[in-house]
Length: 129
Image (cartoon, rainbow, N blue to C red; front, side, top):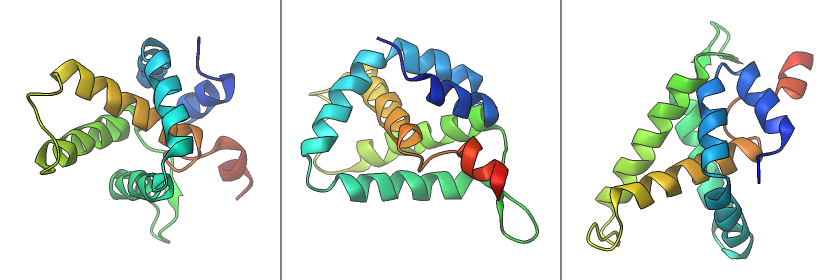
């Protein structure tokens, strides 16, 4: 199982080639998360939170338009922020989840954000604006 080709194009457009390899490596994690997100009642709130995390690390023009930046650096920062938010949540038990499981979840969640076009710029929409 491999992420859709449009994800690869989006990652390349946003200078996030490293994450293509990560997404391939965690494709099964993404498939499980994507399935769960469809059943989760607050999934829209999670996507908004991911978008806000992206807005925090995005690069902007003088006119406040988002521009393509260092996507790998941006996604690394989002991954670190997600990890921090999860670990600080009172409902999270570090005894129940390994570092590897937390990393898998964060990468799958970022993949979800990229795939629903809330994280990174969509090359088709951005090229026409």
